[in-house]
Length: 173
Image 1: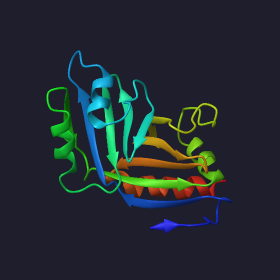
Image 2: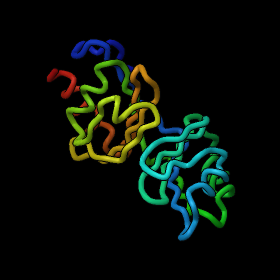
Image 3: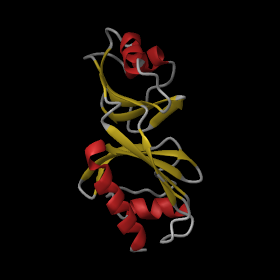
């Protein structure tokens, strides 16, 4: 469902999407993040952040990432697991998440109402990602572009609660 031109906040819209392919990746002990990135064909962020080249790799902690592929084939996680054989553990999370795409200048303002981190563009701009909580709901947030557009991944079972928070936060502005 897309809500364009949300009546509550000027220049804000959001869309609820299936996650596509998502997987958690944890490097084995002693494996350098560069080895994980090389196996996947991109630079793996060593700290919270996002590297993308079709496949997004979101740093979620030391030696761990969330991989995301929007239009993933059903065997996507198996392919990632094969590429990381011997250097990282891979757990398919494709059915576990819903992604909310928030866009427009109002998106940052609304997100800031729910997170205890600095989302100012100087601190949280292109390539930024964080694992945090919004309204007591675990969330992974990353910047998609400079519009600004944000993707917020929440567990599927919390999607309705997050959408309720999102509409209430927008209405309060």
